[in-house]
Image (tube, rainbow, N blue to C red; front, side, top):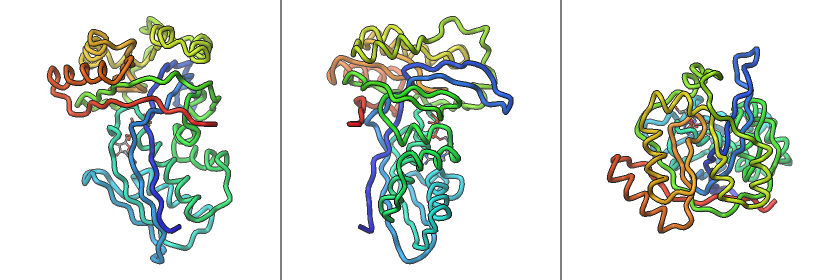
Length: 290
Ligand code: ATP
């Protein structure tokens, strides 16, 4: 096996709560994450060059140390003494800088792919510990499925599988800096906070209606006032058949849950026409078989 192809799936936030600020400047979070089937594709091969080569379908995406995939390859080489070359092609489909953990998921897939191709005896738990040094969301992207993420996102508790649902995803063409969103987050401006214990129960009972009623992301308190298109997209999804709609992560991506593909397709057509947004996708939730 000298070549391997992997899917690197995106995530959405069913909830996101900020509990406080730590001494190191990071925020203490408590959030329920869900993997979706919208994914990037990585093709990884081993060669005799000894070097790391990376390419991508997006010419503007850096393919050097600035890319988490490249850094994953360098870390695997260093940690496990891999002498051979590693060549990786990344096909991006997940919107970039969107609150969907695209880069972290690519990084997780690179760690797993390199482990498998070189038959390295490292457990997922070991890879999660390595991945944490590259990004807080990387361990979750290795675990995947439905999980409660605490700390800065790296402390994970696996939750029961999410009810099978069609998901519409829309990434408005605006740049939202994660650091700026957290920087202007003000707890006193938060009107509603998620109840993660209740949400866990609702997920366990596969109560999609209850889930939709209780989805909540406190970072909307920052982004919705700064970027009116986020509230407008949520409204458009709800008016076009969504059972519930929320911003994912620090935004600006908005997602909606739909009863079936046809309803999601109607909403997709409406959103493409009204907003002229290109990055609109229909996908489904992904549950692991663990
Ligand atoms: P999160 O949900 O964790 O905040 P995100 O969706 O906001 O993630 P990403 O798409 O992961 O953000 O990437 C944000 C930045 O990271 C981009 O500006 C990009 O230059 C850099 N980056 C590094 N590696 C990757 C990668 N493999 N794919 C996309 N962006 C990457």
